[in-house]
Image (cartoon, rainbow, N blue to C red; front, side):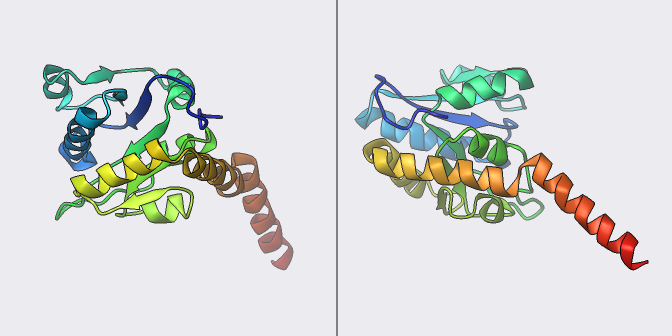
Length: 185
């Protein structure tokens, strides 16, 4: 389970995904820059690849292109996963694996209230207005300053992942549906 009782000297934000503007990476960078002035122990790590990778690195952002097998360790060492996706005229966030993976790791989550994110996250994290730097800052500060909220949402996330996104349960549901359909035929 992710760190929920804050005993380390840093507070680590984690972004996992494509490094493209529509994923909200620049909103996250603005929030981080604003908060880092007040909280120098705040750290951020971007994990992914994309056309904005070089710009992020040029600004001093910590960017990793990790293999999929490295992700569990990254989720375990972070204090919060941030999914700051935006809406564009031609794109809304669809179901991705980042949310269920972070949830299964018991990681508190902050995500944009757009696309399929609210449906996937349920009440297991904090939803923010897409594109709002101030809303993102506020939610990050909530997690930084309230260990009990982090712990509660980490627990909710883990429980939701096990209940809704567990592969064995999904396979059992599919099996039951097929069995019911075949018996009715």
